[in-house]
Image (cartoon, rainbow, N blue to C red; front, side, top):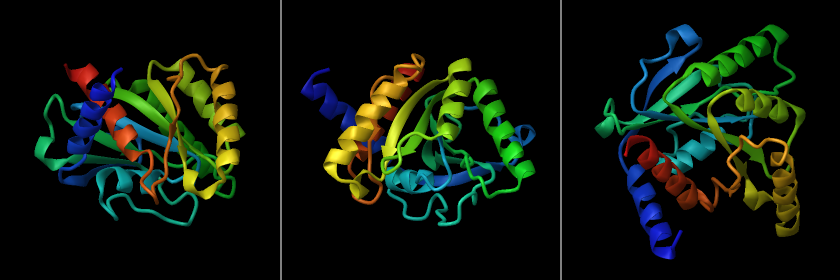
Length: 221
């Protein structure tokens, strides 16, 4: 990929997220999912990994996705879309998935969330990619590995996004990146490139938008 191509994709990505992004659907169960339309990209990760903050940073909307310091707050699949392109074949939807790995939640609730996530991953034909968010400060945990195994079994492409990169020293971040690459060697279904981001500083956001723009183009022509 040339520098010109990179610059073009980054500009396409900027435009993709410059529109009027709004919440449009919440699904507490598979039965209540919205009809499939366009291309969907989902965000998965442990509770408090920064999914909502990432979606807000991507779309330039401070309060589009509800952020909370209380783990396990998001209990549904939350859908967002650009209102100008809603329902179009080349439209993009973002899906904020319930955080997993929240040990303090009631076991029945954890089981319900887990089942919802896994059924969604396995049964959504227009789901183009899942971005699995990993906290740069902590790296992979057992709960992350379980989700990767589910993704390996599904036909969904997935990619690792390291979040909160501004909160660790450069040397520690490099170690986490290296360890993440090593983990991915055991998961050949994963997209090999790791995206490193910070919702607070904005670093990595242009590259993440560009990756989504490229994926949307590949899926819709």
